[in-house]
Length: 141
Image 1 (cartoon, one colour):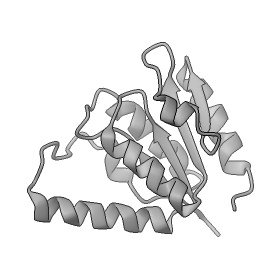
Image 2: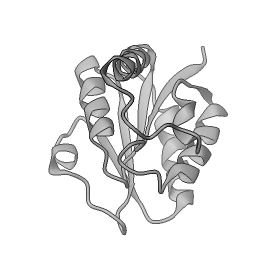
Image 3: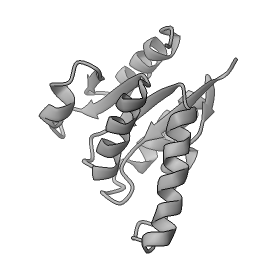
Image 4: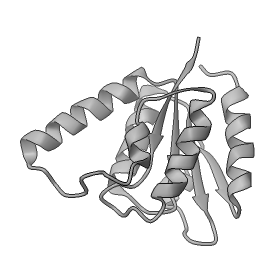
C-alpha cells in the first residue's frame, strides 16, 4: 500500500523556503502520496481569511493529519502552524521527522527536547534526501 505523507512547512510565517518544500514534496511523491502538496506552491494565499474560512483550513489539515502515515516537517523558517501540526501529530501517534538547516536557525527546545520527534539537522539539500530515504524505509507503526 502506498504511504501517505503530511508535509508541513511555513505558509503564513514566511515562504523563503517554498522552492525547497516543492523539491522535498516531489521527492516524497516518488514514494507515496503527499496530502499537503499545496505547501510547495508559490500561489498560496498568505493572509488570514476570516474565522470561518480559516476553520475550513483547520478541519482539512487535521483530517489529513489523521489520515497520514507520517509527518515530514521542514522547520528552518519558524511557524506557529507547523509547531501546532507537530504537536497534533504527536498526540495522534504519527511518526514525525523534522528537518532544518542548522546554519540558519535553531529549533525550539520544545522540539529538540522531545524524544518523540526524529530531528534531522542538515547543511546541504542532499542530506535531506538521504535522511528522507531512511525515514521512508523505516517500518511505520
